[in-house]
Length: 496
Image (cartoon, rainbow, N blue to C red; front, side, top):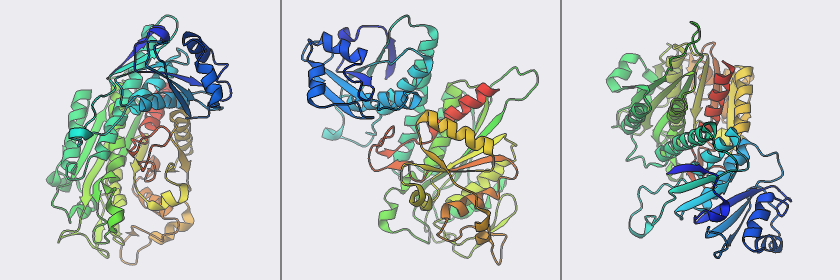
């Protein structure tokens, strides 16, 4: 799939679907709608009025062109009444591509030829076209796939516009990679497979990637990661990706940002076993790792002038004869001892060792993505990630990035009054507290391992996996967090 930027007339675009975005209650006043209506002999506007289509955000109206223009079908997409910006430009691309998934070709009228508009629209087209079909056979296998994507603009098309389209496509492709990994069944996506995929994609992107096997992890000193892995026949893996562009900054080092991802390729709950229904989607417990890997790949593909690392601790959490137990005590990488309370709270254990490793690399910013707690979903619902941070500037920068991406994050407090819940009678820490404020105590536990580094913990348990399409994201693995992380990196790079 490749997106083409063209100044071809919409009337002559020989595609299966022609899409145009419109503002709320301005549908029949829209210049593009009027132009398409004229080309179609005046049949579009009466149909829009007859169906009382007002252009509400995400709403669509579709009709066959019946030979009046070269496109077979015209779809009008509502952009709502909010100011049109990056999120809505992505949404336009996403909805247009979703409606053309079973077709071979699609053309979208660009709202304008600004670079940011073209970048976000192109990204939306790629992510909207996403379908996970790896395991379909016979009649279930798609007969066609969307291969031709046109962005139709006006005026002269220069190098900046084409570069913007290429950047949007690159980011969209990395989001889709993350979705593929999250959607992959756990029998086919072990920690080893995930690590090999990260290494392979890193090689393609020209960035360094170290993969540590079980023996190497033991030498690194990661007792908590090893504890979680004890019940599994599958070896753990630890991944360190490094994108370090060569920059001329007069001797000054570029800022270093490290992303850490939770890579639980399947979570049975361990000896504190989950109910059967609770395991059905636990292949997605490595979504934080997928987001981390994809973010570093995107930074490299965009050639951002900022150093970016990706750290992933990966294993499954199983119930073998040597599985770790409630009441066990293990040391951590940085020396603190941890009393195990609930083996189904394994994510914070592997993250503790990973964060300590990342902290020792002395980043300017340390950010983790993790499907960490059901408590965060209880607090914020299924579409919003919880955000905890030790640094107000980083928190504000992330919220600004989220506004641009269209993904939903909400700041939650690192409430010191709950810290006592982590006190153990026999070790330095317990790794869980009360069920009340569970997302907060999980974040407080992680904070023990980041030192004084400016850190943000992003609990993506809700939006990482969706039961149905929602906004910019599809059913299943959503790739949530990648776009926001990229917007953050773009802002940090621009700030110098």
